Amino acid sequence: MSRVFIAEKAAIHVYDMDLSTGALTLVGEPVDTDGPGSFLALSADGKFLYSIAKPGMAAFRVHPKTSALTHINSVKCEISGNAHISAVKGPDGGVVIAAAYGGGGINVARISRDGRLLDIEPGTCVQHASGGSNVYQP
Image 1 (tube, rainbow, N blue to C red):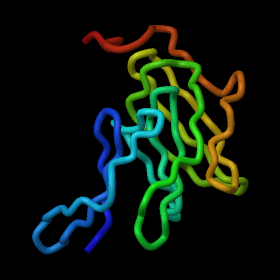
Image 2 (image 1 turned 90 degrees about the vertical axis):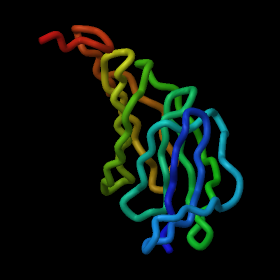
Image 3 (image 1 turned 30 degrees about the vertical axis):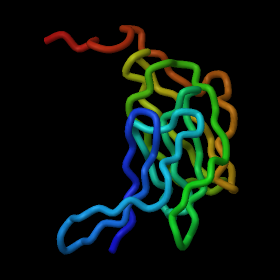
Image 4 (image 1 turned 135 degrees about the vertical axis):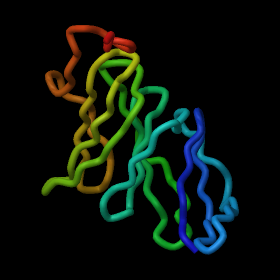
């Protein structure tokens, strides 16, 4: 068995997956605090899960035995329309980077050592000059 996190538009589901058959079994109730979902990033140590959320980004603690998710906090992003998220570990916690497809930019939030997202600091987000979605026109 392996534990799998699957996001939908407004919730995160935790499943057990049978690696020999691929069968999924739901574990617990979906988590919908602050409308998380769509895109997820698991921390390198597996202790935290980060997601796109209605205010911007959300952080969750992953229970070591059950993988149940506990909402830690959410932060508002400067640029709207997050469509991808990635977590990078660093000596003081790390960063979460979200690509804002809708708003045409990149949001960056620092991660504290306890897994919590720190408020986005001015100047850490980058707005692309050409705008949001569909900027590539061959």
